[in-house]
Image 1 (cartoon, one colour):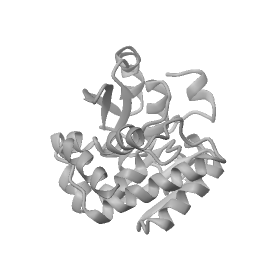
Image 2 (image 1 turned 120 degrees about the vertical axis):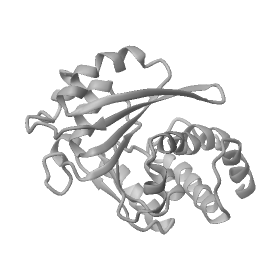
Image 3 (image 1 turned 90 degrees about the vertical axis):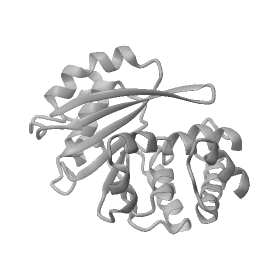
Image 4 (image 1 turned 30 degrees about the horizontal axis):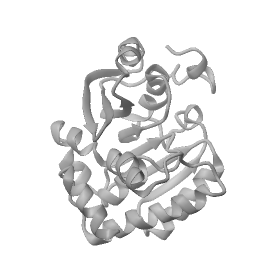
Length: 243
């Protein structure tokens, strides 16, 4: 399994060592075992998890290179990343395995998932990583989290406007929010531009790519000015009434 993982990553110009491959293998085993008693993922076949969860999560490297962020993410020990709505740990756990120096926080609203992710963090011996339980709208009001992150990422299934309201309050001015979206998200991304501007961001680019037959895109937003204190609105409002 270790060599299979390394070779598949290499196909996408992503290099990992044996230790990292072992961590991915252990994460897969834990994911599948826990999935028997908790709904974590509909994707369970090893080859599919490898492509659609692990490699998909780490494919952000192309964007980090393009925006001159890769050196910071790879080498700065105080580079802070938030994975909002992490679910079963994507993209956060693969990112932490791949970029060992980062500080990463995984935020999810379901306590059982957070418990599982902290088990994974302990089992894989991932330092400077933690999973926390709470709603995005609430933690964004906390001075320890608001505008404290260099990079916020999310693969959460949400409208682009809603997701921007959840995520941009956490991003430092000058930092980035990068959303993992499907390839056919053009309309919702276009409709989110007004919301992004209200929240202090600027949509820099929509970057499209393929992982085998799976069309993907990244929505790349730079935080240009502080998010007004009005946002995020109270819990539930961003999803019910997108900006």
